[in-house]
Image 1 (cartoon, helix red, strand yellow):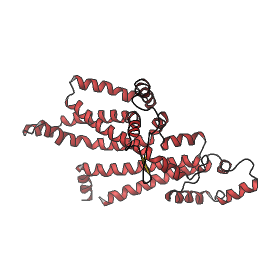
Image 2: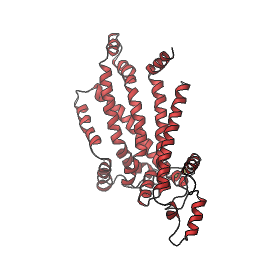
Image 3: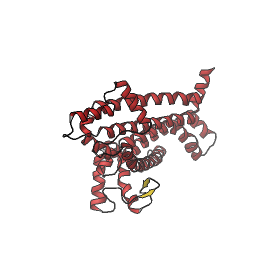
Image 4: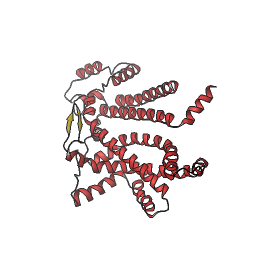
Length: 327
């Protein structure tokens, strides 16, 4: 187990180094950082002095190692557009994105597993057919179109929910949360549905397919022959084995939710890091773009590592295979 964790940690570090190289390339070669920092009236001598001060005349390898060293310490420089430390900007926006992503992920996983199990156990029923047909909406329609449709129905026509913003938030020692206010919870509903609908549909279809496959296996038939109840067979045996691939997909989808919350944050003007990234692209604010790339990659790597560990714990066949390989 320890060797497995160490091996995965080494792989994660290598991935982050590759991503750092990509970020450094963007940081170093997309436009002139000096031109973005100073005004047009700055003299050539002052530009050269600033270039020397920032280390832009150093060899590329030295610059890359310096970039990695500063990134490890959370130093991504100053935003060209806002003239504030990039890390402060990201930390101020990160609670909004994480809150939206985790609520969407939890809702998608809970609803996806529940509906997947229901449609698998009642696959010939009218309700199952209706759920499967309706789920095509979540798979087929683009996220921004679903968001616009929800705004039109629930914000414009019915006026039940707000169409934009995060509502009133509460500062919990540096972490702003909308969970504790009514307007914050109301503002969360439509973005959560928009962001989680595709993931929920994907998980539901995966659970249904895996559940149907497991229910056909011999050990399930043997369990029924032993006189076990349907509840024990379906939820004690079938569902447990169904969840092994679902954990992998759900974990990867959680990373996707965080990374691709950009569209949802743009549609609902959600003040998260995704909206910050979009504004940075418009103004070619390279430090923010590079930091966002590293942050999202780091989240992906951490989630993949956790998923691999869960996969190792849940699936006993992996432990058996590795034990056999040692002997």
